[in-house]
Structure formats: C-alpha cells, structure tokens
Image (tube, rainbow, N blue to C red; front, side):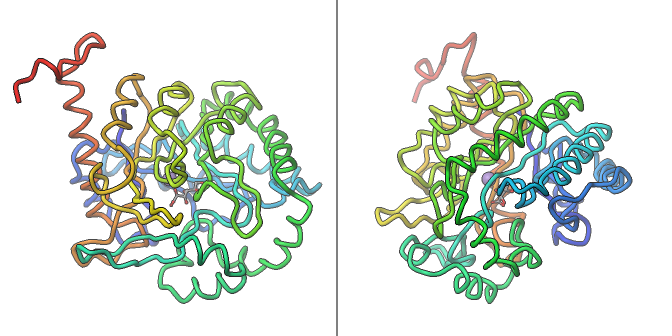
Length: 366
Ligand code: CS2
Ligand code: MN
C-alpha cells in the first residue's frame, strides 16, 4: 500500500509540505485545484504547478481528490454534455501529468454532512459530529445558515458558497430525481468518461456517500455492499473503481467494511481509513484511528487490505483537532499523523508475522 496525505494547496492549507515530509513513509499528496468550480476544465499548466511544488518535497501527485461532478450531470439535464466534455479534457490533462487515480462523488447538492464541526470530546479534543435527530428535523436552508456560522465550513470541499447560494433552486430541481434516475444519470456519466479515463491511464474511484443514507429528502446511492456491486457492474471496466471510505460507509452499522474490502479489493484504488463511534440513536462522532476508540475494527480493516494484497493508495482521512491545533475541520496535521502511524504499525506487524499467506500470530509467545 502507498501512504498519502490530503493537502489543500499552497494558500489554502495551513500545513506546509515540509511538515508533511516529516511524517514517516508518506509518498504522495492528495490534491485538487479547489478554486476551479465543478464543471470547468483544469488547465495543464495549473496541474504542472502543483506537481512542481510536490516534487520539491519528493511527493508524487498520483491521486486527485476530487474532480467534482457538476450538478447538471447528476440531474441529467441537457447541459450535462458540455460539463462531461470538460470533465474528459480534465482527465486527459491529468493523465498527461501522470495522475493515476481520480476520486469523485455523486452525492446530490451536499458533499459530506455533519451537524457540528467542533464537538468537544471527553479528552479535551474536538471533532466532527453528526446528530441524526437534528439533521432529520431541520430544513436544509436553515441548516446551511446555522452551519455557515461555524468557522471553517465554507472552506470545506463540496460546500462552495457559489453553489450553495442556489440551494432552493437545487432542491426544486431534485424533486424529479430520485434513486432510479440518479442511477441512470450516473451510468450515463460513466459510459462517457470511463473509456477516456482508461486511455489516459487513470482509475476513477467513487467516494461513498457520507453519511450513507438519504438526507433532506435527497437520494443517496453509494451506501452499501449491494449498491457498490451494482455500481461496479454499471460499467464493468477496471478503470471504474472505488474509494473505500471506512468512516463514511461505517456510519451505517450494517455495513461490514472488512467484508467489503475482501470482496471488492481488486477494484479499490483509494482507501480512506478512519474510525467513528456510532451511537444507538444514529449519531456518530469521529474518533482517533485506534480500534478501541470507535465502533469500527480498524485492525481488521487493515488486515483485510493486507490479505487482498492491496497495492494502491491509502490516506488516514480525517482526524480530531488535538494539541491546540487550529486546522481546517477534520484536516489537522497531528491526529492524521497519529492515524498514519497506527496504520503503518498494523501493516508492518502483519507483514512481519505472516508468511506465505499463513498467519504466524499463533506461534508468538505472549
Ligand atoms: C472527504 C470528502 O473530506 C471528506 O470527508 O472524504 O469531502 C471527499 O473528498 C469527497 O466526498 C470525495 O469526492
Ligand atoms: Mn473519505
């Protein structure tokens, strides 16, 4: 597996590349041109600029997160044609610059959703939190108003102010687009872009919906093992693959993440590893990566990647805000670095104590 770290870019991320360089064994940054609105082309010169910045610190730019999909494509409007053409041009440019994996999502209107960005935890840290009753009862316009008051929201990916200012129109447009139609629009998009991705040497990796259930009456479809299976068969091509995000899918406790890794390992090109604590009322809080801190068995998840011989990219996904750091919500240096060391610790142990597919754990004296 190849370890990566998400970095928002020179003027957008308070964390400098020279600090990321000091985290053990990180080979690439996960990046995007965050200032370019969804639907527009990414010029080659801008891509090369990031590549040069990364190379200065010996990082590759193999993984992009995300090239966002224009809402008209998700809605299946006639104007999608132009946005799909632009998407193809972006993929060709990325392929020319050597990019290998492109992460994206197909969630209507909202990207990842939380009700609290800085929920205090018993250990004194703060973390991203989802309160189900609040999300279920509030209307989306009100929700946005409340969220905008929380520092940092509008710098989050997928919550671009220009897009969200049209929220009422967007909701109206989705009145006619429910699950079936969204699947159809996704298939149309994939049939167009997957051949271009393949020719450009790129694996497309869809990110699951976060949280993996419908919110505000909007449909969400990348939510479970069965839907992932259906997704992969829409266009059965190796360039049509997955970002497997343990924390997103894991918010639904019925999802068995190690099982999903074992079943679809060959089509996972990007692994987001993080832990969450799920409460019985449907709330969840993001925790440290350690298995005992959350509801997900991170050790078992890493073991599943190890067992399938996972060779692609991994990142620690989010972290708590610790040690007085004031990072972008979920994207501090400290807790994500701890996460990386936990993942590497597990991986190295599996490597050292497994031979020829046989676990040697039993032979180790306690
Ligand atoms: C990410 C998502 O920050 C995050 O939580 O996991 O915003 C992710 O980048 C997109 O959904 C992928 O397109
Ligand atoms: Mn993720």
